[in-house]
Each structure stands twice: as C-alpha cells, then as structure tokens.
Length: 528
Image (cartoon, rainbow, N blue to C red; front, side, top):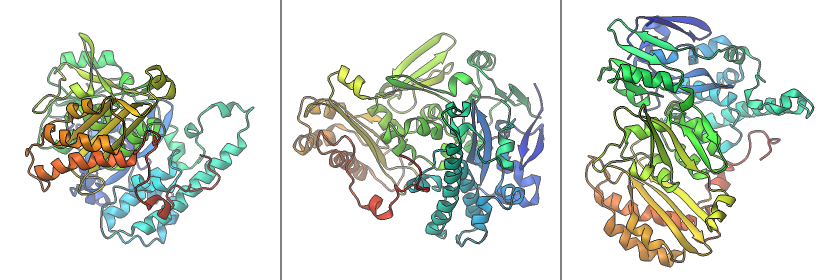
C-alpha cells in the first residue's frame, strides 16, 4: 500500500500524501492556496465549482468539465486538473480567454468560473458542432443573473473557431495519408500548451492508497484484480464516477473503496450488429457520444440528467446501482428492452432492467456482485424485419421543476412495435410515481393487436389510470393526484409526437427549433 500519489494541477505536479481518502478536490484546493478559497463553498448539484479534468481513456484524450466537490482525491492519481484560474493564467491568448475578456456575462465569480470551464471543454469537444448543443454544454449555469444570450453568442464564436481549425486540418489529410485512417478526434490538431500536456499523459498505473486513518482506496485495472480485492475486502464500497458517494463524504465513512474507473472490462463500449454492450463504468457523456446519433431518445434523456459536469462523471452502472426511484433513464431503458449483466466470482447472470428493481425499493444486486455491463438492443431495419416488425416508435418524457439539476416529478419511457398499422407489442414504463420504476403491463397488453392511433390510445387511458399505482412516498410539491395525471399526459404526448405508424421520427410540437435556428452548425462547412 502507498500513502502518496501525484497529479498535475494547472501544469505543475501536485503531491498528495496521507490525505483522507474521502477528501474532495474542492476541500483540498480550498486549503492549498488562498486563490482557491471559494472552492470551500457548498454548491454541489446547484452548478458546483467546476474544474477541467484531462484524461486518457484507451486512445481517447479528453478534457472534461467536472465538479470539484464530486471528486475524491485518489481519483485524480495520474490525471490532469485545470482550474479556471489556471486556464486564465497559463495561456491568456487562448481563444476562450480572449472571448471572455471583454464579455458582459452578468454573472458572479462561481458562475463565471463555470463558464470558463464549460467553454474550455466545449472548445476541444470533437462532437460539438451545432448551436443546439450549447444547451447541454452550459446547463450547469443555473442562475437568473447570468446573461445567457451573451454566453451563447461568445461560445458560438469560440466553438466556430475550433470547428474551422478541425476543418482546415481535415482538408490537409488526403486519402493516401496514413493519418486519414485514424480518427480526427484523437489527433492533437490544436498543438497548444493544454493539448500538448494532455497528449503526454500515460495510462494510469494500479493504485492502492492508504490514508492516516487506515482507510484504503484501490484502483484495479482488470476484473481479476477487482474480484480479488472484493474477496479480500468484502465490506468495500464500489465507486465509479463517484457522484453519489462524494455527496455523502464526511457523513458516511467507508474503510475500503474500490474504484471501477480503470477496469478495462467495465470502461468500454462494444458495438455489435444488433446491440451495444456498455461497460458499467462508462460515463454518460461517452455513452451519448456513441449512441446519440442512432438512439435519439437516449441522447434526449441524457441531456436532462444532472448537468454536463455531472454527466462527465456519472456512469450507467452507478446510476442503476443507486436504485433512484425518480431516475429519468430507467423508463427508457425498459422501453428499449435493455438488460443488465451482473458478475461475481461464481459467474455471470443477467436480467431485464424491468426485473432489476425490487418492490419497495432496492435492486436484485447481491453484495458479492458488480454490474459488468448494460446491453441495449440496436433496432435497425434488419433486426426489426427478422421479427416481422415494420416500425418501432420510441421516446421518453419528463415533468420536472426545471430542465436539469432537480428531482423530476415523473418520467415516462414508451415504445410500440408495429406490424403494418397494428401494434404487435408495447412498452410503457414510469419512474417517480412509486418506490421503484414500474411497467404498465395491463395497458401494454391492451394495445397489442390494436390499430395504432388516437382512438385506441384513448380507449387504453382508463386502464392506465386504474392499474398504475401512484404512492405518496415522498414529501414534495407534486402530490399523488398530480403525478397520476402525469401518467396519462406523458403518454398522450408520446401519441401526439407519433400520431401515425409513418411517424417514426417525432413530429415537432413547438416552433422553438425553427425560431432559434438551433440546428445550424457553428461553422458552415461542417457536413451532416
């Protein structure tokens, strides 16, 4: 066991020795230097105190904006951290710094720092191409005083300059070049101080760290090491992104923490012809980058989860393990017929997400098990035609006090498979209405064999009302009567988005996209 490790802070090596394994980066920074004193203020899940994490995952070098209060110190071993102060001081002529120098963003220090971190991450994001993506990039800016239009205008200029740089680099690469076979996003096309340092990162080594109180933090690199550690420390708590555990730091003590972040079998996405196999420790943003263009409903619901800074850390396996009764992702996973793969030294077992949650709360996950991966089917034309399905309609809807960083009132995930104009099978799932996510199986059975349309759905709604149980198990503004109504209205919205079997792509219910022209690229030469 070792009692020290290093990480890179604002371009300099930072040594951590005998620090509490539960200590957050925010707490560490607040005592490291007076210029970081503001990190001590509690703002988690209200926007947070953001920094930028430089990391290497496989062959992917990425900058990710993250909340310093949701990072335990040992998670940083072998990584880079850039604070907003460090970004400003390291390269004053960086496009982000130049763009914000004379900006009138009308926000305080904390939100101004968040803008720097989020715009910095966005500048290097290879998938950030269109104006609509600014919504999820800056969703951690939840304050009424910030000038959001000004932030978006400045960001558009910064992101356009990055897009133009990528375009110019791409034009230089010809089909005969060796580089043309490599992914552009994995090349250092910026060649500035930040990316040069990022591309110098090496793969992280096995870490077994102990603090002065004999609490341990283990960071295995494969499943064999992981299961061995679990056998040696049966009381150990698994930790991936840490968004749930870090919130409890200081309130709960764990003598042993086992990180899943570097376990290679849990940190990749396997893409097969008919499914995605998503490692339990893959962050939500990485999942969205792989699945978003093909599974639009998944991308839609991911953008409602937490904020960009939280999604950069939260993993799908960690989300499922917490059994969050109001979680927005579960109803869609049920509608997609996703399965969860559980692993222990005794072997593997799998279960549909619909059967993963227990009545009354909790999951079927045993103490000696870890979630290995989540299997999500790919509903392409060939896989549907093999089952005689002509179309599959799928979408998800949430009712909440605001778009992100809040407890949703209710979420619905819906899918219908059609054979011609008739429903061959349906999935109707909800969260937030009971102590665990539920399926409306009676309503599903009623739809089977019926013609898809308004008449059938309105005949089904009384069944939905009578059979879906809504409980008053939470003390909140939205009572059971209101959430009971949401059970109906959310499914009605699904119908109006997909009124006919031909409406595979959802119909627009507002003029917001056309009015704001959000689908326009930051840089005109970007191809669809």
